[in-house]
Length: 148
Image 1 (cartoon, rainbow, N blue to C red):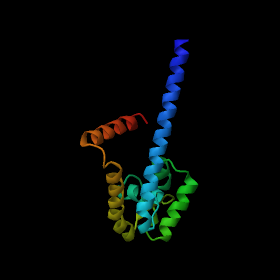
Image 2: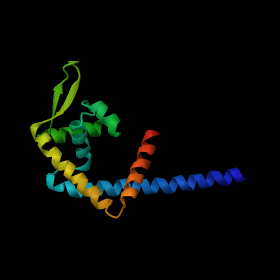
Image 3: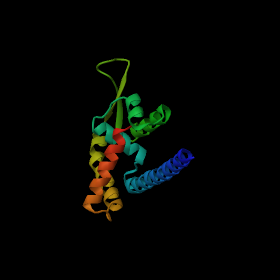
Image 4: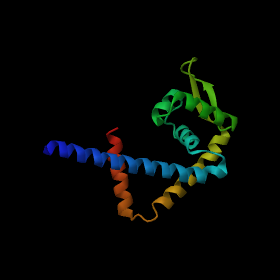
């Protein structure tokens, strides 16, 4: 009986944490979307530009895996960024059948502004945190991400 009670408590604890994490994620995205409106960029587009700028990946497939987006949705987002002149598709020099993504000059130009936006959002969200609390939050997030 103690085991069943323990399992219920774990499930309730995980459910509460799940809701908190989902709520925090949504709130951060909402705040970032509001901040990015002036640049005509969404939080989802921000993720693509920042990952390309930081050379984390260059293919649509790798980008999908990195940010856990559906390939169809990613293709549509990349098309929108191409229409805005921020991203371009090129044939891979290593594999002529593969397509790579690169930021255009305009994409590189907007990148520092995107960093200013996320910095402003995070500064606002963490304004009431002490330096120790911010450090502890980073430590816990790194620990969480190391398990994924």
